[in-house]
Image: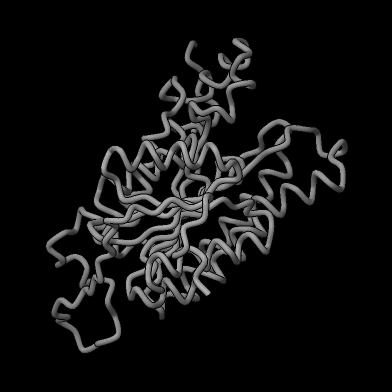
Length: 303
């Protein structure tokens, strides 16, 4: 039964929401009739997401919110989720007032039951077709590895990796039904380089990177692409406490060639591109959004 249609308090659905039934059917100038990727380059809306349905997890703050608003700004129809019901409904009301096509569900992605309920909502709202899945939810517990408890280990693994793995499984039939599905994961530079007190978090993001690559190959036959973005320090509420230390910020800036922190919309713009027909030949890639931090090595500013 489609609970999303009933519109309980945790879900706000605009009554004028229209879901476009997209169908990319350009001519394919090749004998390989099952290969659709190159066809998208001839699509008249290569740089648009007009009418495409999208699920963005954790879309009420920080990078997630920027992604929701970026995709909606390019014409996508969004469903998002968050644990905090009042925060979610406040965001949904604001977006509705702006005329954006965004609905939402209350969901703790670390809960298997909540994940199943979320995907049931998505299937009902979007009539069984999902073009874009952005696995954005993630958390961190900053501690030396030897100080992490079994409970903290479970929290990070279930939130950062188990949730995205399971959501991808649940979303697969919906993405396949769209005929041009795109998955984007939010990874981190911690999956590429060693960062202080982030050993376990880096391991979960490393797992996401490998999942990104494997799905790109395994699900290519279903015309589903899989990519990831890997941010460095982005100005969000999640890192406010760490960045309140001025000396620490100076160290961060010193090892970042561009010499500044990133902004959420500098991540969301890349996510939007990876979902567009214009990026139809890009899959299995993890792209750092880090001001050059991950490639800087030893590059002193003086001497």
